[in-house]
Amino acid sequence: QMQLVESGGGLVQPGGSLRLSCAASRFRLDYYSIVWIRQAPGKGREGVSCISRGDGGTHYADFAKGRFTISRDNAKNTVYLQMNSLKPEDTAVYYCATDLQPFRLCNLSPDEYDYWGQGTEVTVSS
Image (spheres, rainbow, N blue to C red):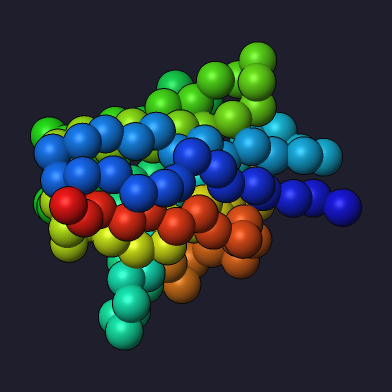
């Protein structure tokens, strides 16, 4: 069964950093677009960053630009989200997801993705 598993969340102080991982089983992450989506308590889902297949074109939400970096390690079949300069408003459950559409470039719309991991919780608090 195809599966996405996130890890790396936790409690961090404002200004700190975390690196989230999204590992895939039974399919190749580099064949498809992968997106990071978050959902804060009481709020809707919002796209954070995505990476397309192949040369890995990337997109970032405005709030993530300059602070977050998405990357992919094909050998480990894992996508990462490096998050720096974290703020309390970054507190959320972070999910990775894919659309399993091999010819579609990535976008930040959560509704475009059908296959999701279970999420990893990030709390930014002093």
